[in-house]
Length: 178
Image (cartoon, rainbow, N blue to C red; front, side, top):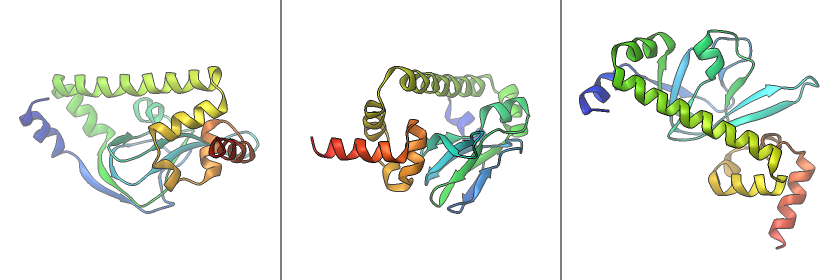
């Protein structure tokens, strides 16, 4: 992306602050903000039929945060996005982002590359839950996102890994004993 275009695009973003515990998006609302997180941690989660919160993703500094299906299809979200810590970032609305995508082919290509990377990460995570043990998934999360362990409750991490709090405690104990 050229410096001129990057400047033009960045002027369309606005600053955003979210307090710990506050929601960027609640289930049932339409996602209208595409956020580039500069500080803090958030989580996306859905509620299963038994009323349990299941974490679907974590978001940290230098990552994009939004609910893709709701944002692009303009339908109510089935997920929530909540700040785990105080968060700051820059945001752009759906309408403004679409204006830029239509007006700037180079920016559209940049956006496409972000979506492809996100889809690839999602596919890897899905396959991991099918083909790898809970211990392996825990170790991968510990390696790829060690900061999340300082900012997210263990029950939230357990739900993300697809295991119970008790199983996570057992895995942590076994690993620390090795």
